[in-house]
Length: 235
Image (tube, rainbow, N blue to C red):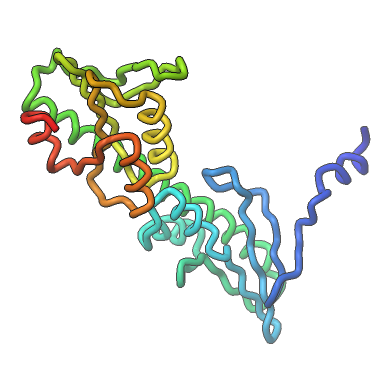
């Protein structure tokens, strides 16, 4: 193995591709999903415009957390701008093109990570609210956290909360996040329907219609505001 061979192996996919209005350049930055960050570069009258093509926004959308606030820290940190769901930088000549491309790529990565962190905080907040609600109606010794329940496949699934009474009520938080939706669907789908088990997917922010339809196939979808009544009176 030598450097020429290695370069050839690692650069089989071209870094730069011509697209409408300019070029698309693949960077070494990665989104939380491990997708590669691309920057798009256009030239007009000797000046350059560099954007992330909305990559950070799409990454955050897949997590269900796309909002203008996700750009604030990243734009301030890398001295770039956000407009129409894109991160961008403009430079008057080629001398600043490389730094501008680096700034946009790094800001795009950071913005997507900020959205992920926001989603994680929201999930922790929801779990805290669920526990507080359960604690008002059920003795704490009957509430199990990170409860494991075996599905029909034999897999042991981790459930956020279980209320252990004559019947078992399994409670999972759900947010408009691909991982959260998939986790609820896979877990409750494998557990299946049993007379002694109640399955609740609890949310505090409305889900998309297709996500709601998916979860309702395998569990009862419930707003946090209705959880206390449900635990007290049953379904």
